[in-house]
Image (cartoon, rainbow, N blue to C red; front, side, top):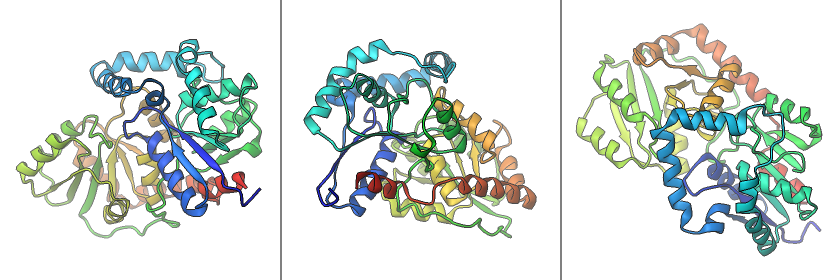
Length: 373
């Protein structure tokens, strides 16, 4: 019944502030605003299952990516991205998590399950396949591709970022009417531009450098290159240091006239204004950050991609034509040459407009509300 209070269970994975959590929180908050009687809860299945082990696993995961990127990428490719159309059983993960997933769902008794990470989606898919679970489930994909770990065939609805991902799911037998091209959900306070911005006539530009919410990746190396090369006032860099306090303090002491360090920003209104004030973004190909930049129609420059999903994201984004990939050297010159090229900017905005034209008119939270009614 419409007036009956409903409960929604959001399932990301790990506690690190990744795109899985950001997308879940954006949907959770917006759904709560539009349907205030709906009870929404977000649970990390690893923390729920193994308690303090979660923080240990998170630390090992991050260290592994940075210490052995080649090995991580090779294993990622082989385990989940090789032959993505083929189904694969992950018996170890089933052994580790299925009993806890049963317990969690029984305990919460939700009316709708929303998975923003592949692992809980896989577990929900297995339970549905065994007829142990009848609750409707939605996959919300936070990258620009779908790998084999995602449970797909038993999931009721799919929120995908691109037309290509919709085609992928259709080829796997998913009904077209159950697939919504929503883009990767971003917070409603990150307001969307409906039209391409006017070309800037000035010869100086403000550039936001984003390295991820944890200050991860090669932001430090990139900033050192920026600081060592004179920009002659044509580029001013705003560096999002995330939770990397050391980088923030280092940049403050540097007192570089063309660099402004920014500590971890939690206020969405502040982040929205920052996006509005800058002319371009230098970042990694993480799903939510890219989605926010696309909403703002800001030129996106990729300075590096972490192994695994970010490398594959970059391949997909290059095919969509919505990012510029930077070489390691002459960063200033690359950015300036593109921003000052009127034809290049017009072509880029055409690609971004084409991307937006494929998205659903309804907001993801509105679709969720309709599915709950």
